[in-house]
Length: 86
Image 1 (tube, rainbow, N blue to C red):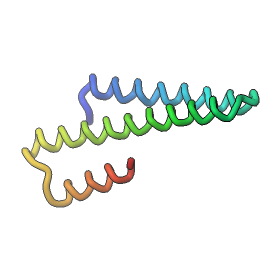
Image 2: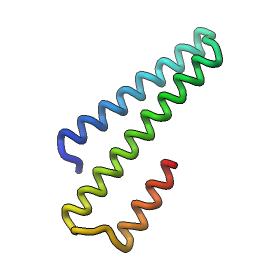
Image 3: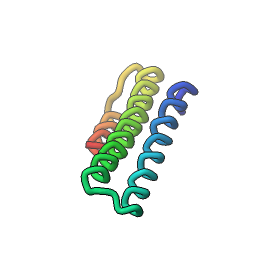
Image 4: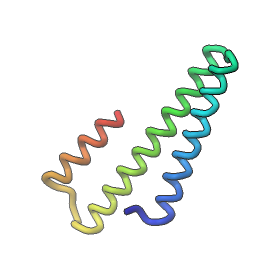
């Protein structure tokens, strides 16, 4: 589990993305122009990606703190998770 400050930062990113997604939905419902919708959707996507990378970074830091290195299955798992976000 992430430390309280990291958890707070991750939750803030996710809440920001949630708000941005609400903005995308409103734009579409109100007939917003294509450029505004796509721009807001891209911002939402970036916010979600950043939250995902922050979660992975936190996991990597914990792994290094407890084991001193990342090897074997841990390394493969982290690599797969990073690639999932790319």
